[in-house]
Length: 542
Image (cartoon, rainbow, N blue to C red; front, side):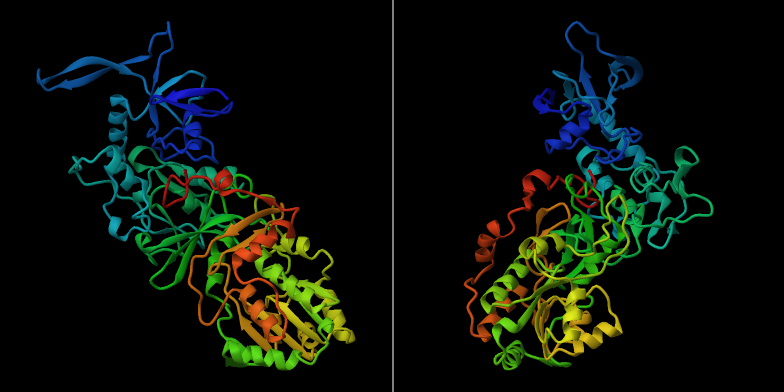
């Protein structure tokens, strides 16, 4: 692979790479505002300027400038190299690039920073971007000088509602145009643009339109400063109190990689941010996916139930034993869940195996909206994983038919969510002699259950999910278990013990040891390869 030198370090690059992109791939950040790895490069912020050393037998491109001489106490004519934007200038073999080691580059960065902050409001204490803002970071790294302009700054519109999800503050905007380019190039809805010039620049929404659709949250995510905020997160938390877990979006079968931001003091999740993975979701997430963090708290099963009454887990297990103890083990039907992790479903498969269950089924959320950008019609995160573990499992519709015909009368189910919530389905579920459900969320199945055991959600324990591409991905634990909930695989183990059978595992690592061969057709994607760097800590944008 060809290389060039950046401050004396060899940087490999691929054909067509710009200097900044090649450096980014190596984990080296050249300061920038307007550049984003997933968008076109307008080179309008000028923060990524670098100095190019001329090749042998080639003259450097120089500029004549006027510079203040403190000795002469006057201005004098001097020359300096013409700096180039690293986001647009192509990487070439054996090229020598100076960034942090060039005094001209350092002066240019400081100058750009000063100009950007001339009219910027000093409202950092109330800005949602505070603590993860590139203006703050770059001032500390590349300027560190007090404001010299004491004139009244230019005032612009504040708290402008762009649509149902986004609020805009023009005074904070640095006109990087990332939001414009995202809506045009990725969301394919060019509803944003820039008007006026110079200090009067501002972003606006096309007349007669509003910023809406399925990707509006990404305009806030790609914003490197606090100009765009989401109504969902606005004024709700300070980022320095939040911690982050590497997660996988539960909204659909795409399996977008995400950062789950939560406050450990209150054990509360506050937002999802895209986690870069070029093989799955690149740098993006949809609005529905970014809001799916709410399911960590909403609609949860956090206490055991016997019928409609709350109970302890031990009491619920005794009730399950009472209801299932005299039933022939092979007559107990087992239902898997495309909503739960591979580990949970593997434990359920082991339960079905030791019970000798003759019929197995699968359930999960129903289909919904899809597009050709990210959103899948399959609204379950682990449909592919369940199919690989139990390819012979029948559908939820077949389960209902078997209930109505009396072929199934005793069921142990993983997951409370069903494809639909129809009164006729509820009638069929009500015909069961026994329905024991292990679930993290309420749904049609938990509504009809005789015994409910509370499972932790994806946010409360580590789990593996197989997306529609067959890629196996791990979501790390973030929150502590809520209420009396336990990991579903642990509850399955306890239920098996109550029924007098041993599943042969004790810990998560035991399950994952078996999973190496349990879903052999999945492709493991290592974090080292696809968990891309997040150089802009708060925005998640490069």
